[in-house]
Amino acid sequence: MFLANHQKFIQMDELSHQKVPFFFIIDFLVDKVEIFTEDEIGKNVLLIDFQGFSNVKKQEDLDKKIEWRSFPESLKSFKKGFDHVQKNIRQGNSYLTNYTRKTKIETNLSLEEIFHHSQAKYKVLYKDFFVFFSPETFVKIVDDKILTFPMKGTIDASVENAAEVLKNDKKEKAEHYTVVDLLRNDLSMVADDVKVDKFQHIDFLKTKQKDLYAMSSEISGNLKSEFKGKVGSIMQKLLPAGSILGAPKPKTLEIILEAEGFERGFYTGVCGWFDGKNLDSCVMIRFIEKEGDQLYFKSGGGITHMSKLEDEYQEMKNKIYVPIH
Image 1 (tube, one colour):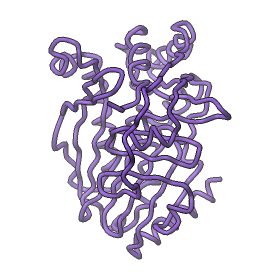
Image 2: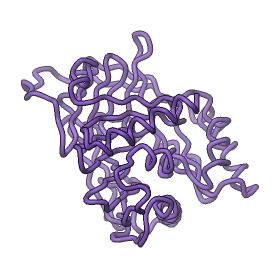
Image 3: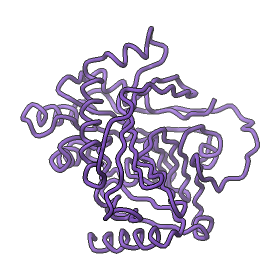
Image 4: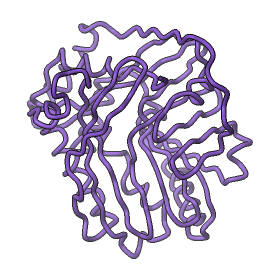
């Protein structure tokens, strides 16, 4: 499997070196790497709406009342994996673990309708398989400068002074510091002069269910000469994405696989568009997947030693939304 991936990353390097535009999708475990040149995108029933690239025609207004129900697991069921994560954190095996769950949802919207009418920085519909509407950039490459924008920490916007509460929440702050540190180290593997340009920036996310504030930072560096024009090599070095894994990476991945008990698949993987010169990529979160006739929403959050069970359970549920308003 690794050899097959290695070939795919070489193919990405060759395309980017030749300045050929392409789109790629990589799953969470970096087991599956899919590459689509511009003429292949349409043939593969792939709809993409990024800030700098879209193959979507304008859609008619949605003329039906949205039905949306979610069926989160019980607190007791959530607690089982949460306790496993906390035990490992207490033992010093991890200091931040991103713990995610899979929730059954029911809606009168098709995956295609969710794609067309949701609002987000990054949207992709892949066949009749999954749709996501992600607010989180993974990395951008502009003129050999690489940037990443880790997003960690969310709060219900209706809370009084929500943005300030989020910025000063001890647990959210610790989680954010950890991810910024992790991604600064990750970028240093492919770039020089890595620095944090913006710290704890607050974004507003509007949704049908509730409005949220999310906290992000901006980190940048200059690509090392051996990584210039090599999108595949860069991805191979940086994945899995630190913001949806935790730290330290190898041990935390083991903990996640033990605690979650379901396959993330493409959820929390990354996808990106290389335009022949620059790259824009995102983390595949806010993710709805079809299994048979049933839809599942995958969501979660970062766990630290300060995490409280009820708060984390609530955060996982808060993220089960569709940004149609």
